[in-house]
Image (cartoon, rainbow, N blue to C red):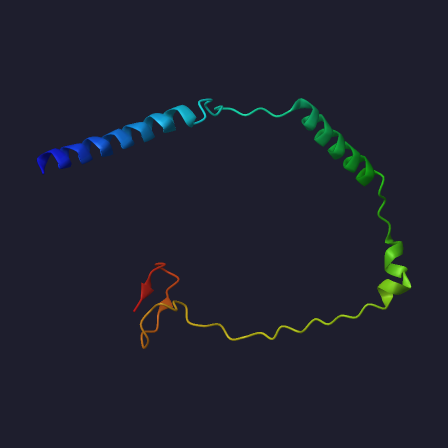
Amino acid sequence: MFKQNKLLILLGAGIVAAAVIWYSFMRDKTPAPLLQTQDLTAGNAIESDVVTVLLQLQAVSLSGTIFSDPAFISLQDFGREIVPEPVGRPNPFAPLGRNVTSTSTTGRTSQ
Protein backbone atom coordinates (compact mmCIF):
# COMPACT_ATOMS: atom_id res chain seq x y z
CA MET A 1 0.00 0.00 0.00
CA PHE A 2 2.88 2.38 0.84
CA LYS A 3 4.48 1.71 -2.56
CA GLN A 4 1.20 2.57 -4.37
CA ASN A 5 0.90 5.91 -2.53
CA LYS A 6 4.57 6.66 -3.22
CA LEU A 7 4.07 5.87 -6.90
CA LEU A 8 0.99 8.12 -7.12
CA ILE A 9 2.83 10.99 -5.38
CA LEU A 10 5.81 10.66 -7.75
CA LEU A 11 3.49 10.48 -10.76
CA GLY A 12 1.60 13.62 -9.63
CA ALA A 13 4.85 15.51 -8.97
CA GLY A 14 6.12 14.49 -12.41
CA ILE A 15 2.95 15.77 -14.08
CA VAL A 16 3.18 19.09 -12.19
CA ALA A 17 6.88 19.44 -13.08
CA ALA A 18 6.14 18.68 -16.75
CA ALA A 19 3.34 21.29 -16.76
CA VAL A 20 5.64 23.93 -15.24
CA ILE A 21 8.39 23.21 -17.75
CA TRP A 22 5.93 23.23 -20.67
CA TYR A 23 4.45 26.56 -19.51
CA SER A 24 7.89 28.15 -19.13
CA PHE A 25 8.90 27.17 -22.67
CA MET A 26 5.58 28.03 -24.36
CA ARG A 27 4.99 31.50 -22.96
CA ASP A 28 6.03 34.64 -24.81
CA LYS A 29 9.49 35.64 -23.61
CA THR A 30 9.57 39.14 -25.08
CA PRO A 31 8.93 41.64 -22.30
CA ALA A 32 6.42 44.39 -22.83
CA PRO A 33 8.07 47.74 -23.48
CA LEU A 34 7.94 50.21 -20.63
CA LEU A 35 7.41 53.09 -23.03
CA GLN A 36 5.40 52.97 -26.20
CA THR A 37 6.25 55.26 -29.07
CA GLN A 38 3.90 56.59 -31.70
CA ASP A 39 4.43 56.06 -35.36
CA LEU A 40 5.71 59.35 -36.76
CA THR A 41 3.67 59.06 -39.93
CA ALA A 42 0.45 58.63 -37.93
CA GLY A 43 1.36 61.67 -35.83
CA ASN A 44 1.90 63.78 -38.94
CA ALA A 45 -1.44 62.66 -40.37
CA ILE A 46 -3.24 63.68 -37.18
CA GLU A 47 -1.47 67.03 -37.12
CA SER A 48 -2.37 67.69 -40.74
CA ASP A 49 -6.02 66.87 -39.99
CA VAL A 50 -6.02 69.36 -37.11
CA VAL A 51 -4.45 72.03 -39.29
CA THR A 52 -7.04 71.40 -42.01
CA VAL A 53 -9.92 71.76 -39.54
CA LEU A 54 -8.42 74.93 -38.08
CA LEU A 55 -8.08 76.46 -41.53
CA GLN A 56 -11.71 75.59 -42.29
CA LEU A 57 -12.82 77.21 -39.04
CA GLN A 58 -10.78 80.30 -39.76
CA ALA A 59 -12.63 80.76 -43.05
CA VAL A 60 -16.02 80.86 -41.27
CA SER A 61 -17.44 84.34 -40.86
CA LEU A 62 -20.17 85.08 -38.34
CA SER A 63 -22.71 87.68 -39.31
CA GLY A 64 -26.18 88.51 -38.02
CA THR A 65 -27.95 87.52 -41.23
CA ILE A 66 -29.13 84.22 -39.73
CA PHE A 67 -31.38 86.12 -37.32
CA SER A 68 -33.32 87.63 -40.21
CA ASP A 69 -33.74 84.26 -41.94
CA PRO A 70 -37.43 83.13 -42.13
CA ALA A 71 -36.52 79.68 -40.76
CA PHE A 72 -35.06 81.29 -37.64
CA ILE A 73 -38.00 83.66 -37.25
CA SER A 74 -40.48 80.74 -37.44
CA LEU A 75 -38.90 78.99 -34.46
CA GLN A 76 -41.10 78.79 -31.35
CA ASP A 77 -40.08 78.97 -27.70
CA PHE A 78 -41.44 76.00 -25.75
CA GLY A 79 -39.71 76.99 -22.51
CA ARG A 80 -41.58 77.22 -19.21
CA GLU A 81 -41.44 80.02 -16.73
CA ILE A 82 -39.60 79.12 -13.55
CA VAL A 83 -41.82 79.86 -10.57
CA PRO A 84 -39.94 81.16 -7.51
CA GLU A 85 -40.20 78.81 -4.55
CA PRO A 86 -39.88 79.70 -0.87
CA VAL A 87 -36.45 79.21 0.69
CA GLY A 88 -36.12 76.32 3.13
CA ARG A 89 -34.51 76.20 6.55
CA PRO A 90 -31.06 77.73 7.06
CA ASN A 91 -29.69 74.36 8.18
CA PRO A 92 -31.74 71.49 6.73
CA PHE A 93 -29.80 68.97 8.84
CA ALA A 94 -30.63 70.60 12.19
CA PRO A 95 -33.20 68.77 14.34
CA LEU A 96 -36.79 69.89 13.85
CA GLY A 97 -38.14 72.38 16.36
CA ARG A 98 -34.86 74.28 16.75
CA ASN A 99 -34.82 77.52 14.87
CA VAL A 100 -31.27 78.54 14.00
CA THR A 101 -30.78 82.27 13.50
CA SER A 102 -27.55 84.06 12.84
CA THR A 103 -26.39 87.16 14.66
CA SER A 104 -24.53 89.82 12.73
CA THR A 105 -22.30 91.00 15.60
CA THR A 106 -20.46 87.78 16.48
CA GLY A 107 -20.97 85.68 13.38
CA ARG A 108 -22.07 82.75 15.58
CA THR A 109 -25.40 80.97 15.47
CA SER A 110 -27.57 80.60 18.56
CA GLN A 111 -29.81 77.66 19.23
